[in-house]
Length: 421
Image (tube, rainbow, N blue to C red; front, side, top):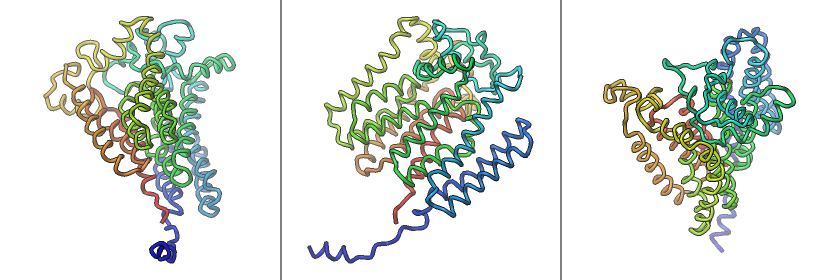
């Protein structure tokens, strides 16, 4: 009782300046480089200088409003992110459909997802299809070799099935479809999920760090097709946080069938479920739910044409020879190729073993860390670490892979940095 009374008489420290305005500080620091990148996008598109200047003035006015009236933070921060991140994507969509060009003004990944959905709507198998003839050959390709996506659909079916209802409806109403519309929906879902996982200032800081990491808008105008899988993983993490473990299992299954590397995040979210009180039996039931969801999505396409499915999603990614994805990018594989350790870009190398070692190291560290220090933000950091490290030692490591790791790590660190006092 004496200790309690003494503690009650201790003065309560007021929140620090960073704690009170951490979200505003994060927004200001990240808005400036993102605005500069957006300005260069406008210059590349040959837009009148008045257009980006008006956007910059609006962003500045919103930031001033946020600082002058802190109660408007939730709205002003969302508005600034919408201008700096979403508006260029909307501009890219309109530009593609309004400006005549011999080249498709969309990235090859997003465009292939869109074409795959179109093939399904026409009753055709998207695996083993000729995407060059379907139009993908017109997509911009920044590598020195022909786009492998012309002949291989590497992602599992959730990537093109989840947007399919919206794709069908939009084509029926407007006569056209752009995959980036669905990616914007996925981005809005991520914003809401981060707010639900980290209410208040921490969630806004995480969202700002996620969307305004410099360079994100530059990739988003071509189509950041990692957004749907990130949204599903965050939804699974939210279900684990709220002890809805069967829902968690179903969401993780949906994430896995959207992009295979979602598997890397599953042990981390399951670890958090254990931290939140899931016992072995509950985890087993959740895993069975995950497996059932994965089987439900994959089985129809395996039965449709098992050979085409395996060649596109397995052999192409981890095999060697003419059917393998060539080594490129700026990861470990490119370094080994440049050093002469690997002689040819399609030669065999034990990348799968290196990926397992990298993933195992992060999983083991996360298991020890998360069970000792209960901090939800750390799950995001470990998710970013496992994506970045495993993809770095894979056959190819691109700027999109770097972004996937960086945005999750920064979102977790931004939340971790926030303190109430």
